[in-house]
Amino acid sequence: MAQTEKSAESAGFTLLELMIALGLTALLSLVAYAALSIFLKAMQHGQAAAEQVQELRVGQTILARSLSSVVTGSLDQRRYFIGNATEMRFFTPVPLEAHNMGGIYHWRVLVGTDESNQLVLAVEQTKNVNWFRDPEGVEVRHIIMGNLTFLRFTYGQDDKEYETWDAVKAKGLPQWIRVYLTQKGQAPL
Image (cartoon, rainbow, N blue to C red; front, top):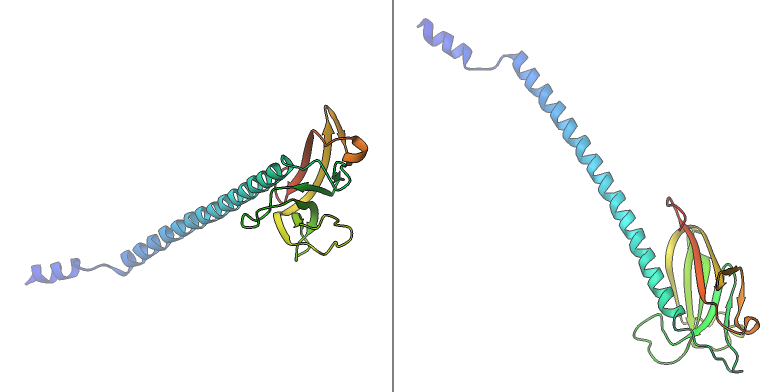
């Protein structure tokens, strides 16, 4: 009978053993939660960075495609390309939307602000040849890139860089256009 009492006592856990096991479980759970939290934050940061890079690529593609196809004539047989530090205006056969094919489009690439007053790079398109007569006659308006803290255009001929460009006065289009920009939380590009 003495053996059955002793084996019944040794079959369970003491309160101290149970408390130590619960403490270790809580500690392991805390470490696992902290590791998961760090992993999720890193993943979100990585996704945000990837989205910014993708936005930059799309913006660069849109600008390169439209600027490489600038039409060099106008109604007066003059070249039409006007640019300053905050906007460019030109004619191009490239529409902003693929379903809108056919014709010559007047593009305005500009530094603007969105609804939350953040700096953005935007594009406006119209088929209206004279933008100055109807500045609100914009058919398509897109924000190419958002979350900017700085944006400026410069124009070049050979190795000289200019703040403004007028194709009529310069008797031609710029050889290159440089876009200086800084996205929030990123180094200048």
